[in-house]
Image (cartoon, rainbow, N blue to C red):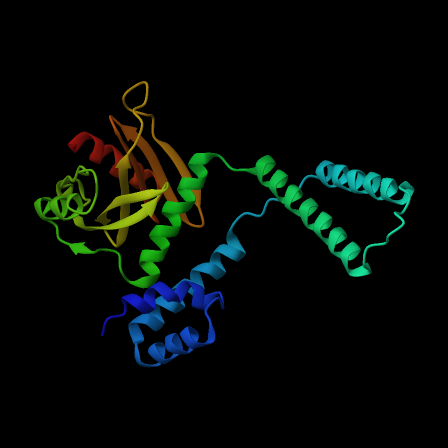
Length: 260
């Protein structure tokens, strides 16, 4: 059974964006496909987690006050303006008022986002965390499962516009398990999958700007029980993510940099 056409419709199906015919087709497929039901359940769980745990940034009181003052002045000016001899239909005046309110909401939302926009690296950290969680929820941590770097590297290189460095860290306690493709920072990226005891480590790799020092000092992030270590080396950027404690994850990063 080819599930690819249905998998592409699961996201809009979850948002109730499909027309009745396509929605019925997806429901019929889900009734007979356990794999697609698991993917849909995982997507639903991930969305619930994001809604309940993702940070919410409230507009500052000063912005709301300025918006109310602006709207108040516009309303007063509208009252003082003489009415034209030919009155437009009542529904048209309501439409114009609604459009003005909608425009104010858009401006307010945009201003709020600009004032509270997170550090760009935080945004990428959120993307790799979501990718790591998604792979665990869907049960698809790897597309190529192999401990042989000479098998993982060619598989990834054939599907990307760069060749990711793949190293064997078995002797350091971080054996290679395989790899997969993902999407982060607006581009396809390589994900190298390593293990440490019972933990999985995803190492996201893609071309990035070279740092002035040639090797960035690693930066660490923690969110929702996951630790992330980010660094750049030459023309590549790296993001390691796991539920490992931060010390072990930093040890992994150091071993990788040394072996590479």
